[in-house]
Image (cartoon, rainbow, N blue to C red; front, side, top):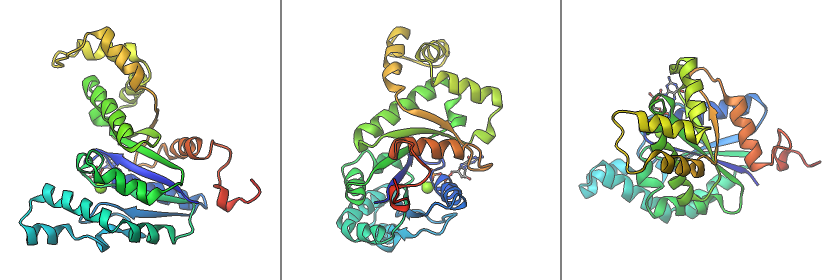
Length: 261
Ligand SMILES: Nc1nc2c(ncn2[C@@H]2O[C@H](COP(=O)(O)OP(=O)(O)O)[C@@H](O)[C@H]2O)c(=O)[nH]1
Ligand SMILES: [Mg+2]
């Protein structure tokens, strides 16, 4: 059975780029993988998808034929994916591969936070082990109140999809090392992050610092891995974290390719 790596995050957080870089990384470590493009509305991809939902659903045609705007057409497209999900699943599972990387639609609120997106994912992954990479743009996370929003969003995503997540901090090539260290410290320390949020002049909060801190404590459950899709840094750590979730970290190889285990 393959392991599923579901790449999630807000529009522009780097899902498509990361999917591509992750596959290159796996290939260079002799690990077999396929990429599924699950975004029916994407125009250009930096990788060659092995399975492409645009073969099943044409968002642009839906817009034209039904007079829908881009959001309406994307919603309708994802609903149509559900109608085709058995065929999509069969196509994915026909590859005998170790890892299936799933690049999810740009607008995550139209995917993860509606009824059909999670149903599509569950139908595709079946009983296989899955891990979600929840991408957080580090240039956004540098502001403490933004980081709070991102952690809340990761938790809601977890509630919706019910797969273990890894908070994946993208675009670290754009940060000063000191700023990256600061984000990592904040993501690890509820008291520090809550203090920074409360002292942020623009942040309007409905909670006081102690309350923020106790909420953060509950939100800081997932591991954080910083990566760059530009420089490729961080992918050894990301791969190790994926292994810890799906395979218990025993080995570099999945069950299928290593029958001795
Ligand atoms: N500097 C830098 N840019 C990135 C990185 N990852 C993605 N980008 C850029 O961010 C934009 C959005 O990336 P994309 O992968 O399409 O995001 P998606 O909407 O989540 O699929 C693109 O212009 C990418 O080139 C990264 O790690 N570093
Ligand atoms: Mg994308």
